[in-house]
Amino acid sequence: MKLIIAIVNNDDSAVVSSALTNENFIVTKLSTTGGFLMVGNTTFLIGANDDDVARVKEIIKKYSQTRTAATHSTASFGRDLNNNDMPTEVKVGGATVFVLDVNSMDKY
Ligand code: 2BA
Image (cartoon, rainbow, N blue to C red; front, side):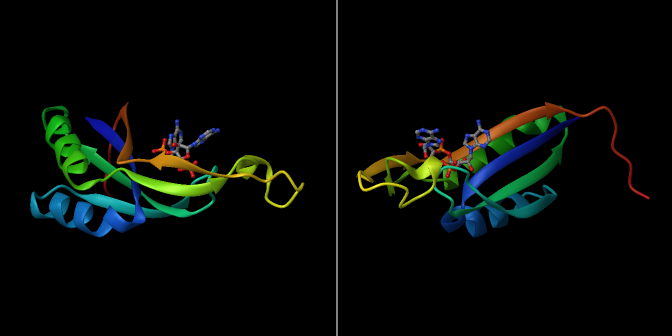
């Protein structure tokens, strides 16, 4: 069994969630914040059989889009710390997906 951790843009999270649950995958959604842009995203926890991991990744990839976001060169250090705060753009997502081995899963 695997635990899939997928960080998805908030704008895509509803459709990703629906697509996964429509195929009977069980998901938990967490409201999270990216450390760089400091804007909200959605983190999905999905416990899945090894054989289903490829399908889960396929669904997430299909419904997660890459976007361009405006930020500032000093974003990771806090804004307005100096006057050289240059606007710039970064590409965000589609999705960032981690797959972890699971030792055991129990439901009580
Ligand atoms: P954020 O940390 O807000 O990052 C948003 C986007 O800013 C990133 O897009 C990347 O293009 C850029 N970025 C992030 N850190 C940067 C840095 N130190 N210098 C320059 N550019 C940087 P994505 O890579 O698609 O990441 C989207 C969101 O996924 C991230 O939001 C974060 O919440 C999560 N994430 C991505 N990679 C991760 C990782 N290795 N570990 C944990 N979370 C990750």
